[in-house]
Length: 384
Image (cartoon, rainbow, N blue to C red; front, top):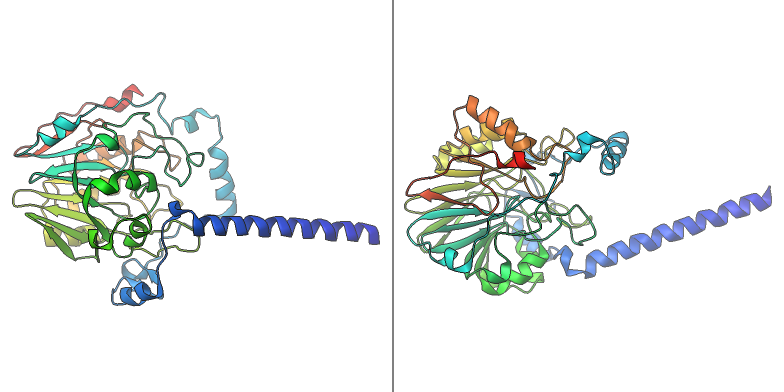
């Protein structure tokens, strides 16, 4: 019996040692690997205290709402197991084959002068062109939405409309929050020397500085604040979401939606977030919008406050007084277990009931917003 107890004690010590070593490796990796970004300093912590959205060292949602998903152990096991399931319903979470994209070139991009144009790169990444400016929104060009290529599902398309190296000068990059599927280390490294200014919610600049971008090129805004770039106004507006790139630094940076306004065009970008009354407030203050890019995908009943369901996306379009809406946060990565094309099909049905036009371009397909939107929908996703 004593011998058995000694063996069990030794095994327990070995297991604890392995766990401790693993935790130490993870901690040091997150601390030293630049992919995980920066951390709030004591000085920044003090500075952000003036924001009504910052409390006890963390950024918060309106009314301090906790949007963290409540995942039970059985729910976690079920969700994790579904990632490896061969069930036909599970396989529908990704396309049957690689999505084809429409290609654009350097000359085509710089030739746009008098129109307002958007080009979708899949998920929530856009090239927005207006007032002779090139603006990238949430430029995630990586193959996987994670710090390492071996961690996470691959992009649905093997190609991009244009490679980063072939992009012309980018006047501004707008970032909504710091999750990996929106803020990508590799993409920023390739982009940073051709970008004029970076516009971010409060705190997110800590990552950009860590990655070698000068502080004077970073403009951080709180909700309801704005910044000018020649004839353009960038307005940082609320969202109901979260942030964090490592376990010990959750909600250290703010999340946001954005408005891009010129003398002729008013555009809304939702970023990520659940449905709430901030959409109606935004619509009352700054609507109507000529074009709105609204989150519609990666939703799950286990995190209903973090992401909108398609029917809520349609309602959000109505709330902000959008003339046209486009579903985003889909068509590139599998981050939930719904069928990959379900978001857009549910949205089209819901938007039709509310009489809101929906635009669903292919990846890389140019959409002219001004002087007049010119687009005819075709259900291209049914080919996959």
